[in-house]
Image 1 (tube, rainbow, N blue to C red):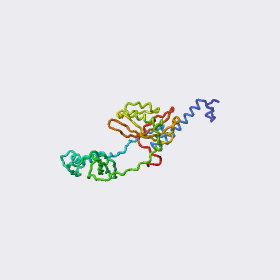
Image 2 (image 1 turned 60 degrees about the vertical axis):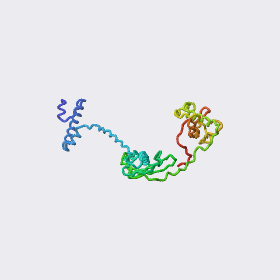
Image 3 (image 1 turned 90 degrees about the vertical axis):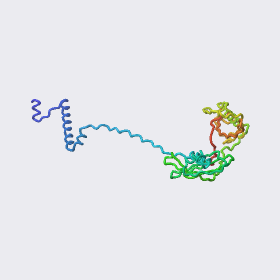
Image 4 (image 1 turned 30 degrees about the horizontal axis):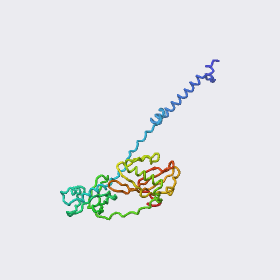
Length: 308
């Protein structure tokens, strides 16, 4: 019996490799048709999802947020200084130059009426400023006179919301000066002998630093860079007192390498116009059996627990 006849009679003929591949392809085609028919039955959107192969979604990079810096209103202390100086120097006459300056800065403020031989102010300096919630400022300034008198005036300043325009809308008020603050206890509580190695090195360094032609490099620790004051021109620098923040600085022998201390050196620097008391804070360190300047400090050093 031929193979075709066996198949027609219901017998299953063994599949060849090609026949198996053809059978698999036929099943896939039928499955694809069923998916499309189902998609058509559910609508265009489902058809699109069924037919098209989804592609990876790439999220767009978020736009960087714009940086908005806070608007910090300008302190009107300088404006108040100029106004008070012109106001105190005005003669009360509109034609006077200082009167015109004061009137331009404060059109509604009355001018003073000094006597002819009134002592003119020599300098005006703002000493305090405070901003109120409504944008107004209060500036206190010190007026110094040739005879040594110092008078304090408070001025109300009107500012716009951005702090770029100002005006004085009221006459200055005479007020009491600031109280003297309590000076905190210094951290430099160890007195150094005048002939100690540390005192001598600090004195020689300051002489080179202030003379204008000295070589300060020889006194500096490695990695420290410091230029002398070329315009100072002091002929002599004498150490009056040297104090340290630790008792180790007062030892007769130079401590081990790497020891660091802070010292306050008070000197008298002399030039052609006289002698001037000056103070310097230095961070000193040891290396190879000698003291070196590690840092020229600025500002006062306060003992722990004080000066708060």
